[in-house]
Image (cartoon, rainbow, N blue to C red; front, side):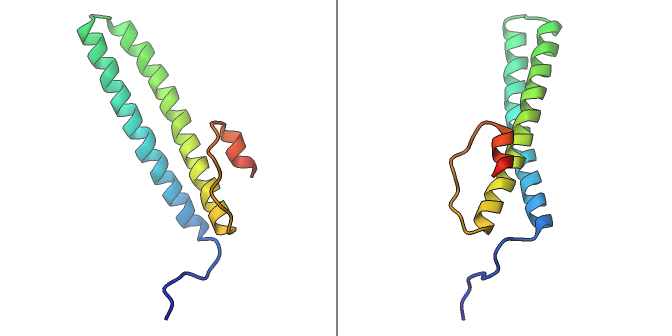
Length: 100
């Protein structure tokens, strides 16, 4: 009896949930670590609340981009694996991962 899954592709809902969870974990962990550095630097160097607000906003935008990129990259890799292709090199562009 073979334990290999002979079905090509996967359930789109499963791929969506896995990609969403990967995006939340990666971007959330990244944002928490960077925010800790921002708050530590603001307190250590007495940079004030303006620095905290600006740096936190930049951190939020970067984490949002990272979450979207991780989701799209995960979806792209799952599509390639489902088609029987090799995993390609990651590209930093979100649109490049959507194309093919």
